[in-house]
Length: 237
Image (tube, rainbow, N blue to C red):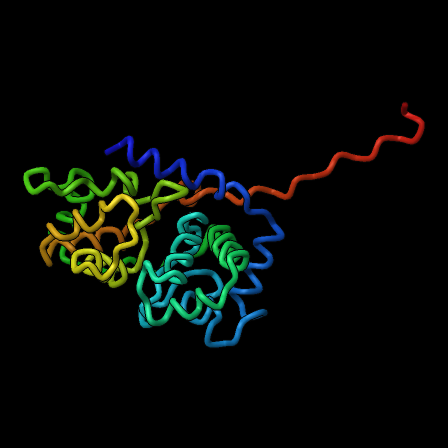
């Protein structure tokens, strides 16, 4: 299992390292409405800072790994991830624009989190146990194997869950369980979700929604633009 995870990580390392300031600037224009019709602008649902809007069913995407975000856009465009809302938007973007939008949102650090949701402490505790150790007797793997301790994610392929809106996380777990979402290249999420009970899904969603990851541990920074070397003085030969 760990070897498969390492292989998946390696796939995205090269792509995740390519984002630079110019690409991020293009992504910002896309996100904030400089290039697309208003109804297709990223910030309409996710916000200009990627905080997400639970009332729109839109997740928080600020500082998610660039490779992960780009893959989701590609999957929406190609139909391997279903969404009546996201599919036409992703298809309207070129591959270059999808990469730029992903690079922009991945670059957003220090975006404030909303207040942590209140919930039954026992329910939250149950979510924490499932995240840390799973339920081996039912072949439910621990969440932290892929999403790291306290749900901070493992860039470039595995998103953070800490601080994500609870309704969104719960909805995705149910989509995996009901085979309405199938774009996991390792097939791990469906295998886990189909074994989760309703209360366990709610427990996990609330547990992660209450966590606040250290900014330095989320995703990976956008590299700075390379600085060209200064020209050699005339007659240096």
